[in-house]
Image (cartoon, rainbow, N blue to C red):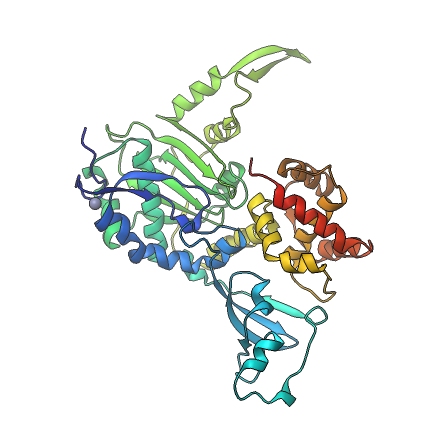
Length: 455
Ligand SMILES: [Zn+2]
């Protein structure tokens, strides 16, 4: 069979399309049936680049970097140093005072490394004030334009992700008439918008039960009106429903599917023709192992199947055969729901080995010199991460792998998801500072992290 582009039907110059743009994920999924010039390449300019740049703060915080640029995304932030506000573009907290000179919002002050300031032309030396950044209060503020989640461009991106993933799993290698409407919207932004933003907390809970914090997830189902739909969850922060076509078509037998990709690129997924087929497998997937208090106890045949929980949640979900309560406008209620998930994803530390290694690399110079904590510091995530490094250092040989660290965190903080609060961070910083050797211990911990491998 000749493979053709799923958007236009050409068989010429097909290329591999990253279903989720490379800059938004550490894991790759590819649809090989997208023509290079007209479709794969043009999507960047049409809608992808703009969405990516507006989500830069989120990808940066979640330690996602584009494999092409090999750099974390830069984002705009304002930094308040002793009451004066400076605006800057940054990609790591550590590069704030290391290299750059920042100009204050009112244009009256500059802040930067002393040698860089002295090199500037026309500087009046008598007006330079020396400060120790370990002894002053520094606050970083980032504002996120909530409009990005409601923009037509993110709708087109969600539709593209859902459509390419659905076609991939159904081995579609041609342009099909049933998809005309969704294709038109992706390519032009015109026609009926097949994308609605989900405003129901039940759906967020459903997807979040099936995925790790910060993951992207895709969930296909047939709705009560017979239409084929895919839920697209970006980072677990916002979920879109994409209507792929009005009814099941012969060419696409798989309609009960799920995939989640976490921040360390790990994935869980399954595909079934229907919810019934999935339920059938679940029933056959267990065997009785005996009676317990008069109840038959069942055990899964394959205990290594890590998708089992997801399959069970899928089979119990009410999404199938019902019509979702959709919400379309950027109502205050909807903004509140997205903000809530955004805060959760950014403030609860998702432990990733990638994130730890990056942190050690970025703080390398100071760690080598010996960390001195700033008692006026406000970067809670940094304090929390230093505490993990400290714990690894103090445990010496007991925390050697990422798995060991996860176990330690589960025990120490009861659970893998930790809400980072000011109170918690003050306590952790105090605990570290009470140990006179803390700088040396952190140095030791950092070395162990550098040597940890990705399992
Ligand atoms: Zn094409």
